[in-house]
Length: 116
Image (cartoon, rainbow, N blue to C red; front, top):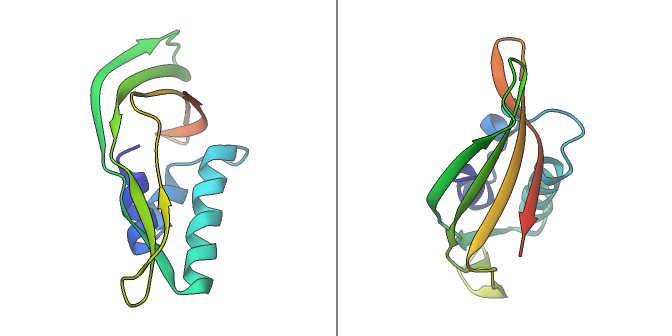
């Protein structure tokens, strides 16, 4: 989750995509947002995530559900000149449930639920 602000700032989705399984709607939406920003000459600033607690639930050899609680800073979309195009408020506190699967020797994200 801490990678999300980096992706939306730099628009570099390489590492994000390497950690995501197909079918992860949240993962796909981050890539889509980055591609949309790139085509419009925009990117996001802010949005740092600070995790306070992380719990592993329902672990098996090939999957795990990770529950995370923390906060996320507000972010904003800016254009190439740094002018704010849109403010993006966020839910605080932030609660996430991340489903991960072990595939080809790596843990990858299969789904993310954001609880507001």
